[in-house]
Length: 173
Image (cartoon, rainbow, N blue to C red; front, top):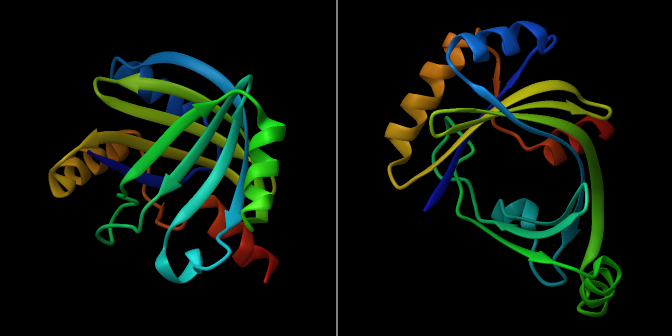
């Protein structure tokens, strides 16, 4: 199963929300997320286009591995996640294994659902406002077609394939 995702810049979310509701979308939840990205002790994730992080989403802790992007129009990847309880212990384990923190991304996210598409309205600290559209599937090209169609209906036109971490690191450089 692939996570097929596109991201777009937006000036604000009010008009996007109006269009989501017009398309029959429903509010799922609002969350605060803090992502801590890690560097592998023996592999350069920047060159292999992988990502490894801990996400703290309100009260949930999620360990995530993201494989290299597949294709060029979207951020399609194989993604594996696992929930865990003890944040301190997990950070200590990663540290003992030689993983080091690369950077952190904090955001507030409002999640809507339009059929099988998750629409995330993100306010990312230091980067601005974005909209991410995501669906799970096995056919990347068909998934991209569906996501871009909905994106255009939402009035989105300026797309970004880099991750928030990549954007933050580029901004720092």
